[in-house]
Each structure stands twice: as structure tokens, then as C-alpha cells.
Image (cartoon, rainbow, N blue to C red; front, side, top):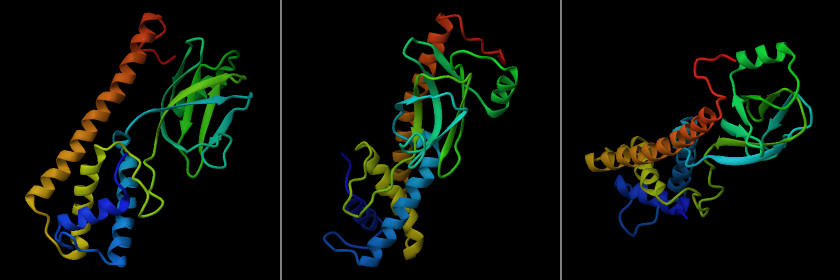
Length: 228
């Protein structure tokens, strides 16, 4: 489990000399830090590489062309930033396609099992489009946004290795608000923390993609030059 928002904000404020060791920040300083923390995590979510892991979720299709995804949607879990893979239990791989290819497939009028998915990351509800239309359970690998901590006392629910990156990058973000300069040491720790996370997550995400391509290749169903 990671640290609380409170702990990370205090640590960031100490890192730029706003407070001294053992000193308690004011309520305004904590609220400003909490706001900056949430803004930073949302900005990181825009870079899919910052998301710590791929989530696998099952959805049941009913023959509709599209399904809304997000709180209050047909798929009532957190809205994904992106979909990176999909399959059904009989080891049939479903291809993730862009809007243009999805439209071409729809015009073709094919019927049968689901073969293609296009995801439109609209807000506040994303939309999943499938084709051909049918009724079955599909397992989808997706990337979801980093969650805002609800309260200052809430745990920042990421792997513990995110703590250093959050602390020092938050310090860099807060420094201008207090007229503080960021020391070379803090800047280096901020950069190193981000680089470590990006390298780890990129390796994990690429490993998942490569594994899927290998499985497709062995099944003689994948052609990198094919437009389908």
C-alpha cells in the first residue's frame, strides 16, 4: 500500500523548504497541495505509460452496436483510457481497430461472432463498439486512469514504488506557487522517479502486446500488413 495524500504532500513541502522537519503545514497549504496532487495524477493518466497495470474486465454483449462504459453506463465500472486487447474464452482473439476500419467492417454486413472492437474514449462515458453483433462474454484488457485520493487521509492507491515519483514531482509542481527554487537533487529524484515508472510500465505493456502477437502468429491469424 502506498502512503496517504497527507504524508506525500507534507513530504513534498519539506522537499522545497516550505515547512521544516516536524512543522505542520497550514490548512491552506495542505489544500493547495491536495489540489496540485490531483491535477498531477490526472495529467499522468493522459500518458497511458504512467498507469501501473492493465485491468482485465468481462463484459456481456446483448446484440447492441455500442455500450457506454463508466459510472452510470451500461458497463458500470471506471471508464478506461484505452483498450489494448480483447478475447473470448474459446481463445478467439478480438481485434482492436480504429474508427475507419470499424466503419468499413460495418458496411461489409458480416455476421457471426464478435471479431472487432473500436473504443471511443468519450467523457464522462466511453463507448465500446463491436462487430459483428452478438451475445457473448468478452474479456477486455484496458488501461484506466489513476484515481484521485478522496481525502487528505486517503491512501494513494498505487504500488509503493510510485511514492518517490509522486513526492518529488509534486515538489517540483508546488515550488513556483511558493516562490521556491527546486534543488538539483530534488529535480533529479523527480526525473528518476518518473523514468523508473515509465520504463517498468512500458516493459509490462509491451510484454502483453508481444505475447498477444505471438499467440496470433502461431494461430496463423495475424498479418501485420493486412488491413482486413
